[in-house]
Length: 504
View (spheres, rainbow, N blue to C red):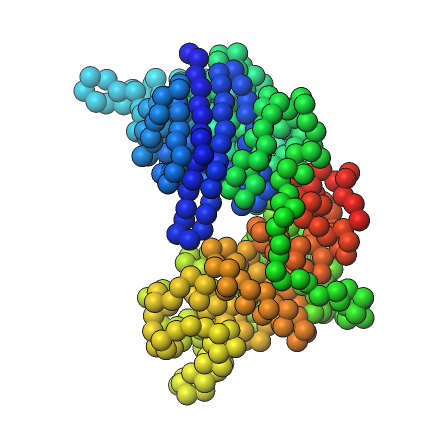
């Protein structure tokens, strides 16, 4: 069952964004290859090229030394490549067994599903993680009833059921507790003995050094280092991830001392959600505080809980007033605004006009009947302040470029003059020119006394813009970076759980 997979000089573009410019890796039977990189380095894209989710634009894949081209995930599966996705591919209203065997159910000669066989084989798969479940799990359990860690286990079992020659574990341990991780690693060692090849994508350094044999480091879409895990250490890998030559054109202002005189705008104590493990922090008026860490560490939960969009426990004070928002409308009334990164799903109504989108949170402000002249004047003022490039306010948002559409998402909240802005990765997919305008806008808003909590998956943005950065890791604030300690290398180290080398 010997197998080898080689990705050579892989290129992938998403419009004008280069996700991969020179991606390379090689993995053999009986090996675990760790695919490592900071946010936006290209790890997920390279994984998706290998498993057929995205089609490469350049380079080639070699399977057993022969060129292959996967036009779909099904084509990759037929060639023995299976993936455990971080973003679950399960169907919530179906059962455990139905998800594991979807479209692959054993059938008799009449095409009828052999339910007894499905049940028996599903139980055999579930037994692989026996003793690590929090619920009484059986083949008939609906996926919607499971906690996040058990959904992840079903995702793993769904891939194992295919008996692949090559298995990609894409952040497969992110939702698992320590017992479940160790059980998975025990299975990984068994698969190595069975001559399977495993690509392990993880942000947890301790796991990488426990299970991997080889590593490949990606940085800015390029493979920049490879070798044996036993011949390196955590800090050497972090240094490979950091681009020393990159220059962030926008430099944050040194204003920390003046901020010490400002009143505390937000005080959070023991904040807990399903993801957050009890965090404490304070933010002063006019401060731009970054939220860092690799994706999925609780950043979104933090913003949504402050905005009243998910349930939480803990204490929140806004300008010395204790608040506990149970709905975004209550947060809006107290001067909060949430700018999402996914403008298509959460920020805009694309079939409606620019004016209507700008007025979405503010209709009541203009009375009943609507004072259109005043609302149009205010919308035009905000549009001009954002340098919004448009044919007119009456045009549909769908007529705008991605960067200008994101300006509308921000502009609709500026219409309400918020005091605390929560930004959820707002520059994702935005062109460089618009980003520069956006950075200037954030600085101006802080100078005007507005307070900003800013999550970004772009480490350079956090280092270049923020007064300080709170780095989240496994639902906790791992460290706070400020002044001389706020460097990209320190940020990446803390994001990966490597805190001992954080220097000032």
